[in-house]
Image (cartoon, rainbow, N blue to C red; front, top):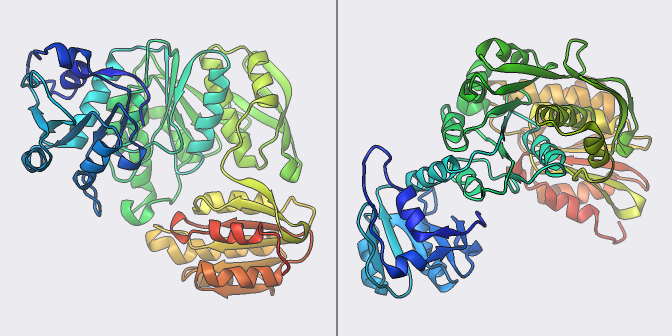
Length: 486
């Protein structure tokens, strides 16, 4: 949600169709009414909020306008179709786009628009265009977006006031809320950009207007919807196409598809990774399991030894991307170095103390072939008995069986015990068994997995838990961190 302060007259101006010239006439109440934050979730409403009633596939936000009013909202953006019945039912006033607000109103003011989502996006676009921070970063990729965003935000924020997405506010409905938090104070903004269908990233770029692009990877996430890796690449390239010739495109040199985007922009290009030709690269890498990674950083004007507390080679690449952005934004290396050593945020998975002195790697947030591979490669560096609890990977389309089998084959090389969870887990199990791993256990659901996992782990084991969001694998983590006797 946006935590900036917005005068009502600015909202009424910003949500208009920019192709239609309309003058907003306001009066004393509308001139003095301000919105303290904006939300699309009625449960997050605080006094002084504006609530935007979005219509989703399963939930209609108009059903929660009354709850938003009770929680203290002063205004709500609603559809023309719903505004009259809400006004009649609760005695609220209504203002339509382009019309002057009522001279006075009590309670909630309904702002009626053709489509609340479009209105929110227009307002966010208008608001973003009022400010022009010198460094506006857009980040996308099949994996690593959130971690890279957090690293970039930390490196920039120690040098200049920086806005960035909270959590994973990276969609067509949540990124506008981030943009509405932009103020004249900010010198940088970092926008993570998610993709569900082709055109989504282009829509987000139209709102955020980035002048720096970071592409982390192109992989089979969302393949079921998108149909092919080529289609996914085209969707990710929408960010590259949005960068002006005066901007910067930052590409992962270790991903051939991403590296190929260099030919698709007139902007300057910098690359990062472990490849010898990368502009910002890591060499002499020493992986230290869950204690992190050390490497030599070679970049323009920099040759130094770096310790990254976040473990895994994938995090090294994410940090390299962030360092590249820092270089572009003229952040002194010594400033970045201190941030990396002392103030870099914890990202994605966490290592928890489990039952019987076990270590639990909680990477239950989500799963795709690339991220599962990275997690297993990290587990392989741990000097303990290793257990992997792997759930289904979703939205892989026609490669579903093959991708799960490949994960099983890799697991056979990295773990001592494998527990698979879910219908697709049978393919992981089959791949692992075919590759020679005998300690393989299959269960259909998360609840059923808990007693199985607790029965197979031994004191001081290291246990990786990972699966797609829909699998709710965090329940397994919670059970393993409960201090009871097995």
